[in-house]
Length: 249
Image 1 (cartoon, rainbow, N blue to C red):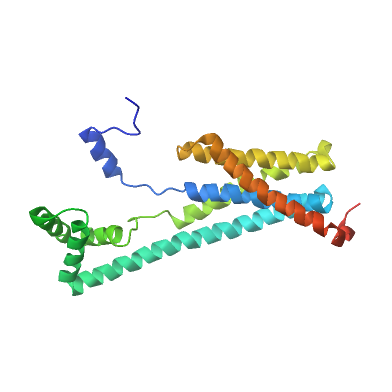
Image 2 (tube, one colour):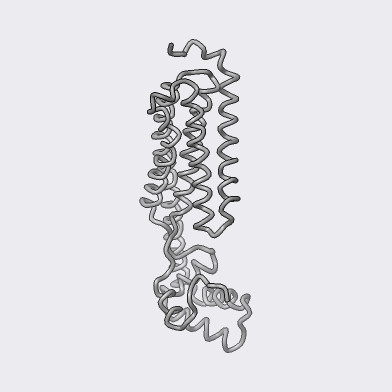
């Protein structure tokens, strides 16, 4: 028999259910890693396309990485916090409805579980059991009527995860510019190589965590970032005659 992800003995089931659902910060980390690398390599590629020196690419890439990383972290913080606020408003609304129209709210519980195939005495037992506890009643409405989890990720941790991974992965394409022996076009070639490794690594890691085909996930992420870099390079190349005066000899 194939090894399963968890056991099914009664004690294991009770322990697993008692532990509850832990919010995942993987989406925030993956988003930060991919966007961090794409943001930085896009700046580097546009500078390379414009024919500007490596120092310009390093300075612009560093400034863009920090500013964009902070902006994305704040945006993710606000997005997660908005979900928390919305969930709390729904809890308050459902509590008010239970207090004012309890029969109508019981009918909603009955309709929800009737749609799941329960009927007769079993259905009425479920309705009675749920509606005996006000907090449980509200929890069921949040999950079943609105399709929301009872607890989401922490806004602060989600924002920090995005920012830290953004900086970590986004800094990799800038590392070659700190190596003097790579002067000239060597900077840009090495930077592109670092970005490719970083993007593939993020995608491969995502595949491991989500139990997806590793190489496919890595290649998909690499192609996405490579496409963004190619567009940035093309823009820099087309605009090069307009900014030729910015070159540092």
